[in-house]
Length: 152
Image (tube, rainbow, N blue to C red; front, side, top):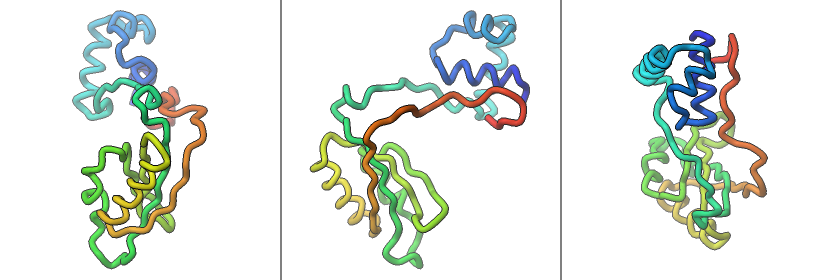
């Protein structure tokens, strides 16, 4: 991937609503060249979409936690992501190496809601859970590093 594409990706990660004019100025290309490059990055699946960054506190979901799950019986089908997909409190599901099989990022309104969600997760996926509550988030969703040798 060319450095100019990396610069475009970094700028769009910081501000997904940046105009093509401002993006072109930022990376030193014409507007039409930037538009073509962005379209190519989208077609290649490098840019998978655009989203708003929201305040979960403002949405009354101030409690964030990581929930590590592992099956009671590892010989059973590995279908936990499918069994849990209906739970809207699960923001993300990561397949991980180590003792746990998956790490879930969850967002809820209260400790009581977290307790209820954990029970739903255990029941729906037949798993054990280990939970870590987030106290604060110094940073997340940082833009990718721009430069050679850093895959986007």
